[in-house]
Amino acid sequence: MADKVLNVRVVSPQKVVFQDAAASVVAPAWDGHLGILPGHAPMLALLGAGSLAVDLPGGGSRSFQIGGGVLKVEGTEVTVLTEHAGDELPADLLAGFVIHPEDVA
Image (cartoon, rainbow, N blue to C red; front, side):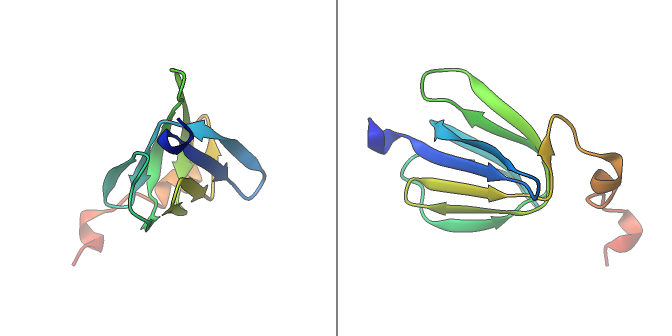
């Protein structure tokens, strides 16, 4: 079963927010959500703002509101380095992730 789980670590500038085994992870990438299961290919992703969902191996889940950062998958290790992780995003951080039509060329 050890190869059927991910080792997930969520880190903000203040602290390690979460570090435990997971069955799957769904993260808000800058251009949409991405899902990660055991056996996923190695990758790096730029994160946007939204809900990071971690499904636990024995059932249940944890979720965090994150804002920005990067996600790395390597083997069974999933590392999320984010500017913020908590129950909700601060309004000033969320405002930086809003795209206005006049900003798109």
